[in-house]
Amino acid sequence: MIYALIGQGQQKANITQACRVLSVSRAGYYAAQKRSSAAVICVESVNLKAAFEESEQTSGSRRLITAMQ
Image (cartoon, rainbow, N blue to C red; front, side):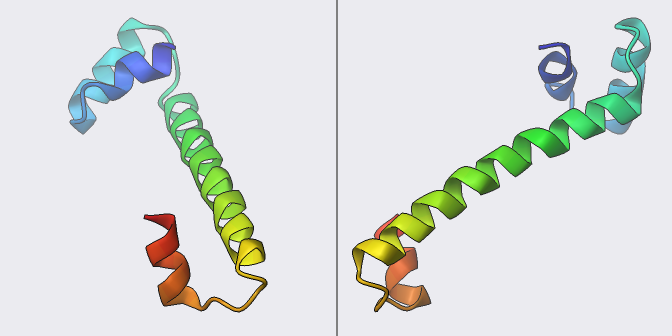
């Protein structure tokens, strides 16, 4: 929750100041940011695999990209 609040200010100086004010480390902020993007990638890969299995493993990359959109 705190890290999401910090993420609203996207300039590096603002992140540094926000981390200092909220008493959290910058490394912790960036680790939380990386974890959240990894979760999105994981969900997308599961959806991609499901689309591939649904096509009986015959669709190529272009068709799968179209199916995902």
